[in-house]
Image (cartoon, rainbow, N blue to C red; front, top):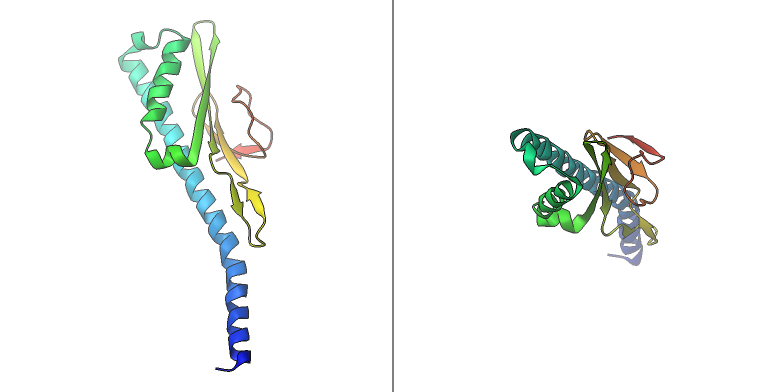
Length: 152
């Protein structure tokens, strides 16, 4: 092989890497978000089912928080490593409303140019378990939907 053949080969590999890496990172983020969404929905469904069969276990705010903590700890270890699941319980009269959020635990990765960038999205869910994909930085979990969110 001549030097020119080696240079052309390296150039082709560089171009393919510049195209493939951003696509791979985007695919990985979408997959992780889908897994986090599934986990959030499962927590809401489990709580709704259990509340119907054992309503006395859900008598105050701390019982909701204890149940959420237990359910969160039962998530697959890989998901707990990828996302930080946080929640808040809001009491209005005798009713309790749960709001959750899933934020990447390792939001930084290198883009195709070698710069460190953050994941673009995090998840937020309302009191009925509807999950939204939000952009920007995540703050504390609140009961109002953050700006820049769309149904996921």
